[in-house]
Image (cartoon, rainbow, N blue to C red; front, side, top):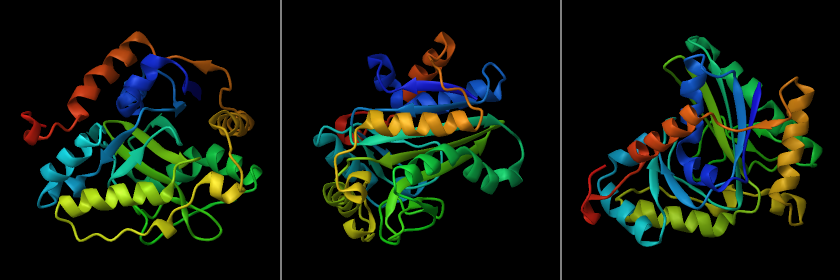
Length: 259
């Protein structure tokens, strides 16, 4: 399993919202081996299919953009999330056409993250955290039942892409308030609860670094036989991510553009 380290290079930060999908497309075409990766990003909001059906999605997106947040549409399921410097994003892509492998993919492809968290003294399980933003049945929740990582899967075009964001230092209160305001402006009655979300910082009672968490995940991946030496995307993968970035960007018509 190739390891893609997208936590440092400036160009990879720029491509972060579309990088995992571009890599998965390359894996499906057998132009690249199965790949897992870790990403940092500049702040942006990711919307899910259900968010696009809200009565006033455009108004909600325009407000997010006015806060300086680019908005993108996700390739997998789920709802609105904020990705920022307090998150460590992760993904794993394998070639598959087996529609019955969804549960196994979740287990196998998140194994390094779950192992790393346990070693950091924060054991997690799959499950829902009712009231959390982007609540889903395959989120990673703490022993106290609070969401610490959102996880989704896209199974299409010959690949399985399991991806998620680990809340390392993100403030659950501020993030929940931001997403709640988006939903209010978009005409949704969804009620979010900050108390349903936690972070690694809260669980540990100290300030963990993204580098510390990254190293723990890579070490756990190595024990599974996955690569520990980082690689970079190929020029073709980088170009594919650049093209996808434009396609996934949600440009509100309130700003004179169409999605």
